Length: 208
Image 1: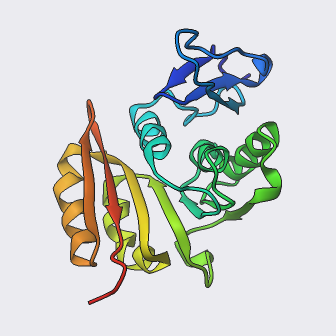
Image 2: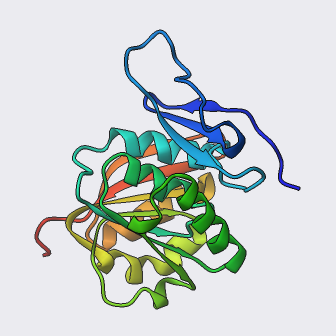
């Protein structure tokens, strides 16, 4: 049986809500701004409680002009980050995970949030994505893997697009930033959490 949880806020605009409580009200009654509910199935790791997921959600809500954007969520897990991007205005998302159980959970959560028609799912690795280009790439996976896939991942980012990386333990933070900078990316933000870190980058408008 899945682990139950109660609704809780993340950042300024989002709330994580269990599927049993889809009518959860705005969690901050002192503000006029309505929060977007991200409805999640119980028990799935990556439902927003972990500091890496929460930091990614906080960074997503601060991105400007997500409207109409095409998103890649590599290591999508529950799909919470892709779902958030879509609810914040993105047009479509490709969710990729190596675990078939995670892909099924992601599909289920997409249906809960009524974004299933905007999402494609892939059980596999970055090698299975095919020919595509994205306006926003999200990868909340381990730092050593981010270093390993960097040369394959960066070309999927359109010129001028945003890359949001997390799941990076402190010991990998410098190496991750250096690797992506050597591939032409600019670090916009380097956010150190309790144990992990989140890095926001941009691919240059023009290469070279």
